[in-house]
Structures are given as structure tokens and as C-alpha cells.
Length: 236
Image (cartoon, rainbow, N blue to C red; front, top):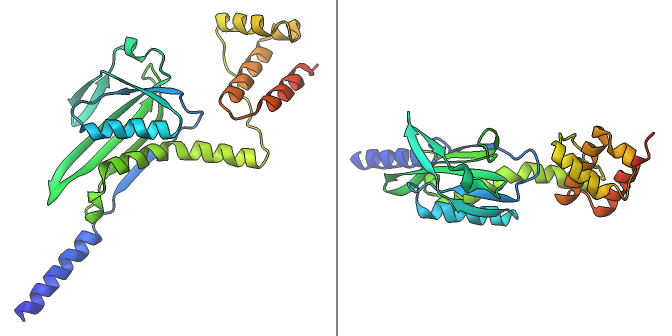
């Protein structure tokens, strides 16, 4: 009888470990073209392997990275980072990260959070967070999980773009506001090839700038760019 009870206890324990609370992951994907270069704000309190995984994950998606010094201050159980604005020059975005480990038979990463903002830290561009579950799956390799989190932030945008391209659908150019200096430079660079009266119209300038960005980001080809540009200048 004691042996049967022991077997039952061991079985119940195994079921609990294998079917415990599942891990949770929340993702906010990039909704626009990826940044070309990301400054990674180093968090010195986090294991070094996480930083190398972040760089590897960005490289996988064709994004350059540069590690910069940063200050992470813990307030109310949350990390609040800050960076020197001079450090983010020549970067298109900043990546911040937090990862925590605990012990249960062996060390494992029970929480990780990665978020990307613009260089002014005023807008979140993408984010992925992970909380380990109660089962044995929590002992996943931390660097593998970090790479999966990076992948998850890029998937939706590029899947959508690839689908549109395969279906022959061209993304609608977004109207972008240009500074007076940008308008002057754009007009000077294209005035010899286009109608200067139309270039003097802000809407035409903004449409052409947006169209140029789509080409530079690889969303449309050079031929498509030239065709759409011709259509813009063919308007009355």
C-alpha cells in the first residue's frame, strides 16, 4: 500500500511539472520598415550571453548594431534605462533589455524583456517579453529564447510585405512631413529631371520622398520607383 501511494505521489509530481503553467510571451512587432542600425544599451547586470544573442539576432535580420553605455535604475521592481544622447548618433533606434535568472534544481531564465525605441526614447517601435512557466520547459536555453524573441518582432511586417509583393500589391506611399532643408535638398537633386513647378508643391515632394524611401528599403524595385514617379508627374 505504501508503495502504491509513493508511486501515486511521484506520478502526481511528474504531471504537475510537465503540465504546469505554460510560459507566456507577448510581442509588439515592427509595423514599419526595420531600422538599419540599432544602438544596444548595455545592461551590465544581465548575463553577458544575452548581449551577444541580441547582436546575433539583429545581424540575422540584416540590422547593424553598436553597443553603447547605459544606466539602468530599478524603481518599483522595474528597470528604468537612460542613455547619453551623444551615444546614439548614427543609430536609427535603441534596444533595451532585461533578463532575470532564478534557481530550481538548476539556474534558468524566468523573465526577459526586450524593447526598441526611437533614438529620442519617445516611441516604442517593437517589444518582446517572456515569462517562464512552471514545467520543465522553463529550462530552455536562454540564448535560444532571446533569438526567438528577436525573430518574433520582425515576422509580421516582413510576412506582410512578402505577401503583398507575391500578390503584386504595392504598398501605398505614406505622406511624410519634410523640413525646409530637406525640401530644398530634394528639389535641388531632382530639379534637372522633373517639372520644377510640381516640385514646388509640398504634396509632390512628400510623395516622392516616401516613394524614394520605399525603394531604398527594398520594398519596391527601381523600375517600379521610376514608373510610379512618372505617374505622379503625369497628373494634372
